[in-house]
Length: 436
Image (cartoon, rainbow, N blue to C red):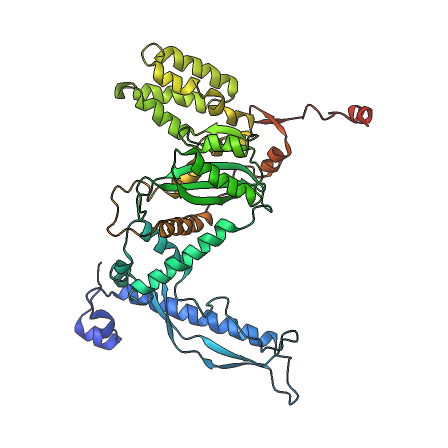
């Protein structure tokens, strides 16, 4: 860190002697923290003032106002991205009584609720660091200097947080799915290799697209990536909680997911992930052939329509079939599942060709090769993954042309990405009258 250190005379005149004595302190950090503290204090005062003004006309028998300021709460530190900030929140004396319960009404700040000790941004980074292998004992030493304080980062506090996250994950795994319609779903098994007692186990993740086009975590558990029964348990549980059969599922061909899908939701169509498929094909080819093969495969998955994609498959077979039959078979054996996305809106193709929503979420942790010493329980690992996805979920973009997702669920027909009239529907006014 670059420290700004004025001369001793200037230091005494400015009154920042204490701020500059520590080796890790800097004027910039202090200015940022002080600015954050002042802005937060001003926002809290404005919030309380607005609350009191809202009920200024409510008075008791003696004409005294029922809602007034009443000093300040005890100071407390709140850990923010700018560091630890001391907050002195204004207090409200609300003498109004709830007519239904008979209890006194209480003011609760929407900016800084009584239980908050860390801002959401800091809360989100903790499970990510845990998944990366940071021990609960190391949070204080690792983040204390950066945030300016170790308050709220003790091992006991982190342990309590993990317990809270486990409870949240359990509640999520039991919540009702009957009120949400997932039209598309992505499935993948993520080998995190962090804090799981058995390294062969992985996280089974299911992310869906709602009828309004928004992406959302559907289910998360641990199991075996290639085991059909592990995926069947996940899908059966989701169905038991009210999940409808999705129209299309996207995933890697090696997953045990497909056998489970055919058992639980046999009407759902299948789309193989092109990202995984390209890796499989290249693994069956010599490195010298990779550049040409990548270009030839791109001609298939990036074709303007299904007919051109089939022509590109023929060209790929002609170019590589004689020498590398196994590589070609990886395409031709799964051709229907690889080209299924062409029967859906063209605006959705970029989303349906790969399992990127899952890949990108776990990109920072899935390639970790070493397991930290003293791994935690599987429940802790799942809970941390849940918090990681929950944090990422708020940043997920809806699919392109979200209004078309509802049409897909309604059974609308798409040819080469374009909407066409349903064959069982009359297309003109005369046809409709005859049908009537």
